[in-house]
Amino acid sequence: MMRATAIAGLALAIPLCAPAGAAEPAWWTQQKRQCGLAPNLAYNVWVAQGSPCAGAYRPPPDPRVALRSRVQALAAADPELVDASALAQTDLWNDESFAGLVARLHHDLWRAYANSEVVTADWSRVTQYYAPHLARLEAFASSLDARRADAVPPRYVDALDHARAVEADAQRALARARQQAADESLGATFSAALWEDARNRTLALMRARFLKAEGLPAATDENGRGDPGDRLHAPAGPFHEPWLGPEPTPQQAAEGVIAPDWNPDGFRQAVPAPEPPLPETIDDRVSAVERLAGEARAAASRAAAAAADGRRLEERYRSYLRIAEKAQDGIARMQTETDLSQRRTTWLEAARRNAEMKVRNAVWTRVYATGKALVWSTLADRIVPDTLAGLANDSPFEKARKVKALVDQVRGIEGDFELYSSQAARVLAEGSPAEARHLLDAVWAASRADGRETMEKALDAADAPAALGQAWRRLLGDPQP
Image (tube, rainbow, N blue to C red; front, side, top):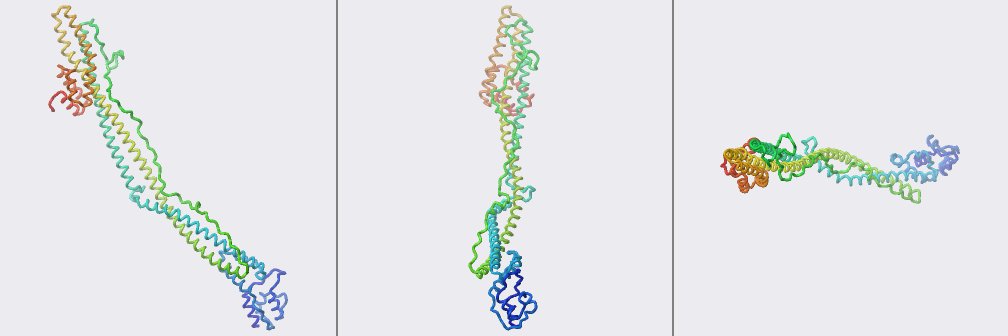
């Protein structure tokens, strides 16, 4: 009985539920003979009966028992790495079946080991690629203004504020220039009306006295009545007014890319290593499987740690990427507004230059028309009445001669004055007091008093800037008020 018990201990309760017709170990056959057991008694049944034995035979230990016990222990210890159900489906005492089981276990362990190494390698590539981008995202986040809902950095806010301030200054400058142009245009219109009135009064005086006066120019109607060819129009100024394009419209600013989207699939390129061949002997194969089981467990631990680190990296990366995308949307909107403000400032400056040229042309026209009004007023109020009054005692021949001379003077004034008036207007508009005084003296001569009064009326009617009135008085040599 003690020998039987020892044999049972060596067997370690290894199942012998072999398929029908399978060969049983020779030592078990011998054991049944020595103990007087039934030839068809299964080893497991005998052990369950308490291993009864009437003989004293002690068979030598079977070396396969230890190998099979090691394999069973390995399968029980690593059920997540190997298919443990294969043990129940394999005749462990059939050497060929047992060798096949060891090969399958080695394949399962190698596949687990290789796949774990692939996971670790893939996450390593992902980390190597995204870690620098995460650092940039973190640095970008540190530059944001947490006090703002859009988190836009202060430099973009300051740039927009500065652009808007410059634009506001440009708008005010344009408004002043346009108002000045409107004022000067109104003054020019008033001076042209004075010119036309004095001219028509002069012509009316002469035609009233001399119905058949030949060579007199026709009267004009600036208000649009009569033949358009007979209307009086003050010429436009000679200064070029720059072309002004349409006002700028918003142009969406392109958003910069700080970091790429999270997409680790493109970096998972590792492939499992090929399974190495098994050793020649079954003992070495079992040892190789045991070593591989330890390596597979370590590889699985590394893969789990790498995956956990990768998931933490992903969570942090996605969080900072959302912050960056929100801030970049705000930055893009602010840059669009800044760009629009800057382009509007450029347009406003061009519009101001255009308005300034309109001012110069309006001043030119105003001085031109006022000069015409001065001369015609002198004719209507002094020269023509004086000439007509002196004809009362003259002979017909002398009357005809004086009338012809007066008509020639009127025609000469209307024709020759163009040269002086345009030159005087240009010089005055460009601000050369000395030359302007010389030309005005040559043109207006004795009518300076009338000219001063008419120009002052024109300036007052147009509500012109005080500086223009002061320039006018300075040209005429009057003291400053």
